[in-house]
Image 1: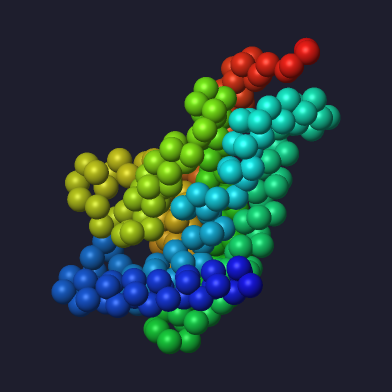
Image 2 (image 1 turned 45 degrees about the horizontal axis):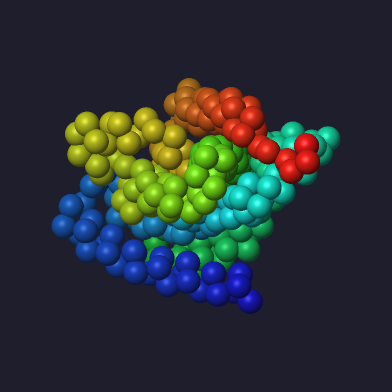
Length: 247
């Protein structure tokens, strides 16, 4: 039932954003390097990836924060499994479910009603899915860092909310980052949140070819490795604060 409600919500917001984008692009055709059809495709790809990328938060964050607050994290640290990789595997499964459960239907509805620019052939679709996978890993790595703040704050919900707002703005969920003016746009396209929507959407639209596509993957993979490494270092510092009663 929750998934059905989510599909309905994503589809409704897809229509709302489509009409807003249509009004904007009719005044500024080619804005951000997109024609109207490409801009509308960007909207529906964004709705398809919203939950898979956990752009507005969600996923493992609430559960792991509660385990840190309650002290149950001590049990997790004694398990014969790496904490960061354990939750990464958990989040990849969540993302796959949401991509199929809440992503496919809104995208198909958008394609049925509007003139969207779908990729032609299996290779562009495979390229898009690889970009989505890398984007999910970047999203997880950011949220893992946010969760670790609970070791010091005990309640990390405030940081989670701030992180969600930043992700909404800098992922390109509100507007493509190519629309942002001047230095703000250049900086936004270099930040890790661009991996969550801007890069996958551009791969979907065939903006990259050859070495440019390899560069897009390198951008996403580079941020994924850097953020996972940062998470590993911060985790090693954070667990020193764990106090086990009687231990």
